Image (cartoon, rainbow, N blue to C red; front, side, top):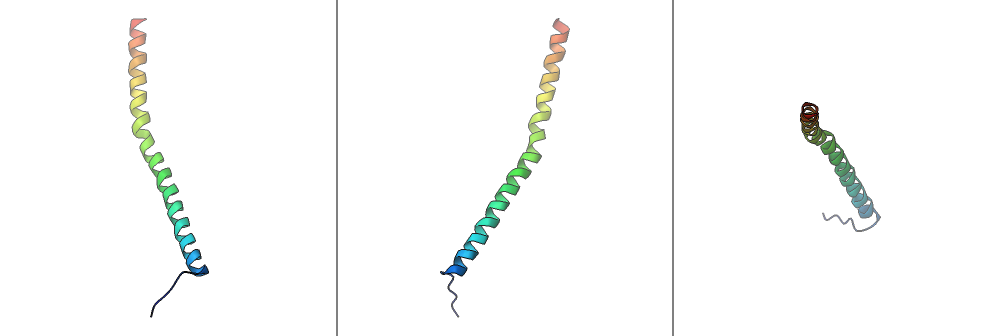
Length: 59
């Protein structure tokens, strides 16, 4: 038995597949931003604190 999805059903299946792909892509990008942001912000605050401490000692 051979199935052919070349008509309207194929268009619907392809649309659902692409929609699921882009929803997943958006989700993973949001998750990566949420998880990776502290890895950059926390060390940046350490650098700012060190610079502020050095400036307070000088002046």
